[in-house]
Amino acid sequence: MKKIKKSTLTTIILILFTIIMSVSFTACDNSIYNIDYELIELREAYYQGKLSDEDMLSIAYYSNGCSREHNENVISEDFIPKPKAELSEEVKDLIRKSIANYLSDKSKKIIKYDNIRLGGYYGEYNGYTVICRVYESLIDDIMHVQLGGVKVSYAYDEDIFLWKKL
Image 1: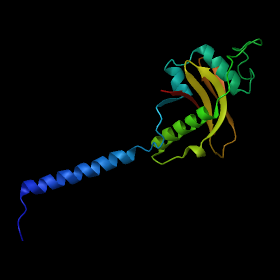
Image 2 (image 1 turned 135 degrees about the vertical axis):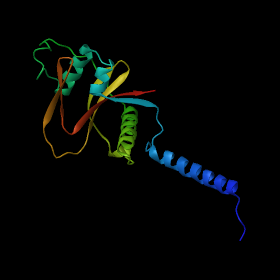
Image 3 (image 1 turned 90 degrees about the vertical axis):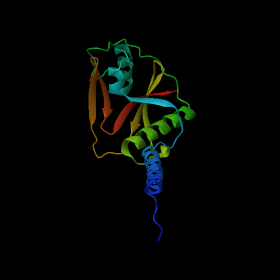
Image 4 (image 1 turned 90 degrees about the horizontal axis):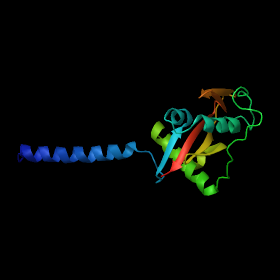
């Protein structure tokens, strides 16, 4: 049996290692939809300064079913929220695909966009669309998140995101 040179064996091992590592790193990205987007959870977006206190008033108003409930002390009776346009089906699909990518990367599992259900749409602020994602949960309760003195209400089985196509 011929002896294999140590340098040849080392080269083969390095090549195999490189192939295995490139496959491993590729498998870590569970994004399946090729979309350039930014997706931020509401709380993070507020703390990053992407939303003003005035923006939060409109978001709270819409998230509370177009009412001042839980915010009577900060939203006046004559408050007029920032108007919101309708979202096209194309934009809704892009948002659902972006959320699917986000959740796939977070959970390390492939999430299909047709499994993503959108809930409330709260308008456009500083180039971002504010949208609610709904998922199945056994908890049927409402929580209130206070940001900038405003309470935003949503169910435990919802997440509010800011989305922007890049």
